[in-house]
Image 1 (tube, helix red, strand yellow):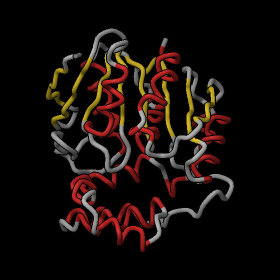
Image 2 (tube, one colour; image 1 turned 45 degrees about the horizontal axis):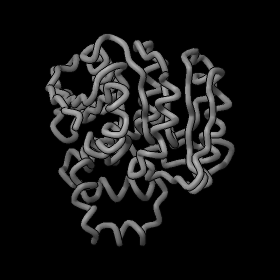
Image 3 (cartoon, helix red, strand yellow; image 1 turned 30 degrees about the vertical axis):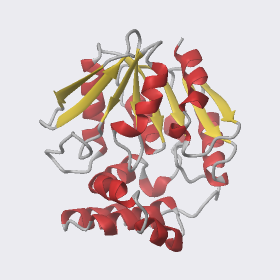
Image 4 (cartoon, one colour; image 1 turned 90 degrees about the vertical axis):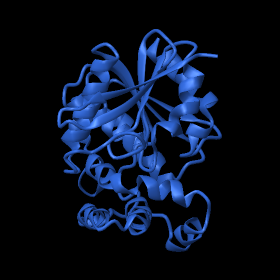
Length: 267
């Protein structure tokens, strides 16, 4: 069994970021999306660890990580990612899932020492693939979080940012998973922020990415996500696009589907 090491590191604003490394060799940082902490990428880390150093961390305000500034600014999460990269040696490959994909790409765009970037199903609005989230979602989420209404924040994010039908969210509120979702809700404004204004695909910015990129999505995921990632791959000059048969947005529960792709990509 491969052992893991858990460390608390400091970000630029003094926030404590919990980082867990497993395995040895080339560091590959795994970033979860909304409602994710480092536990949700644990299975993927364990799958990759015999071959690389799998690095997972709690994004600020989640799990064992703190959020000193509470500014819900993209730069704060970029500072956290920079601190994680420095912790594992000063450069790394990065994989991001969902809004974690947006964060990984933003790290590249802001000049972090990322050698290769792989993303899975980044949410984005492009060519009418879905309705844009309301412009004030982030501000309303911040208000709910500040007031401590984490149930309301989780419901707002799911219905208006993700587009989950309200009756489905009502069922989720009565399910065992709701407590886990609620526990991550105080960090949801960061997910909205990193996804950009009204979640529009920023093709002109992604066209400047020069590092090797891998864009992956499943053939059983929502059609709007498939359209978004097809367009994302077309926007990044260096990107390779892969569609995974039998996969949907919950691929972190099937790490064996990602393992060969990521290991081949990072070399």
